Length: 252
Image 1 (cartoon, rainbow, N blue to C red):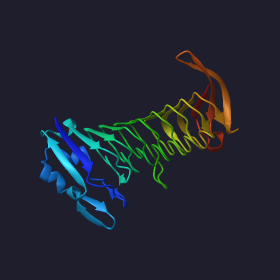
Image 2 (spheres, one colour):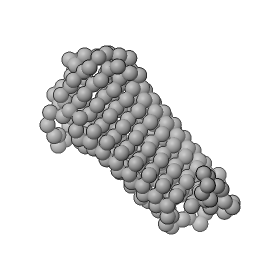
Image 3 (cartoon, rainbow, N blue to C red):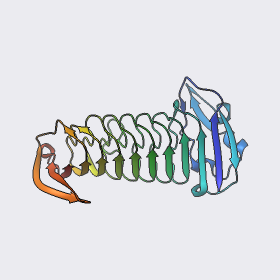
Image 4 (tube, rainbow, N blue to C red):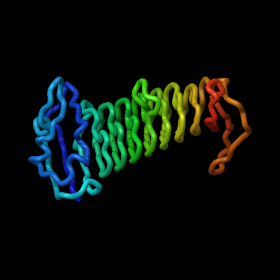
């Protein structure tokens, strides 16, 4: 097992672009090696060691590497980008694009996450023990597919456009979500245990289960009776018929 502990030397006002901070790039490396890894700050690249205290315990292959962020990294973007294995634990808030393009491994966030959490991920797992901002599990603007695989669990609330253009994988939100969850979905599964507004607009495929209250339900869904899941009966709707969709929307 290799454990890498990172803590900011001081709070940063300009965001750090930390797309190189993932287990794949840290596996088997010493403290000095890791300190030389470049990160973007403003319009230039600088060694990671300029911003972070680094402590390494052990040395191992990527699947046995754990990165631990001690403290808030609310101005550090792209942590865990494209990671394939290993684990990241963030003990504080995190900035945008955490887990972007993630292929495997696990990220645990003990705080809140800014927008685009887990966007375009294809595998692995993200557990957020706080609230999420916009575009969880979505695709960047103009992309045909957002999240394609893996699982995101939000143990708090999420804001608008949850799972936009989602094509696979699973998202579970324990709290409420904002506007237009599952907009333009083409696959995957979204479970919302709280309330939602205008869900599944232009959904073509996939499944959305909403256990709380639904506001402004679109009229472009066909009623197909009911479906029972674990003893709870849901209204079953299929659509969005405006786009020839065959997605399933289950409402308690």
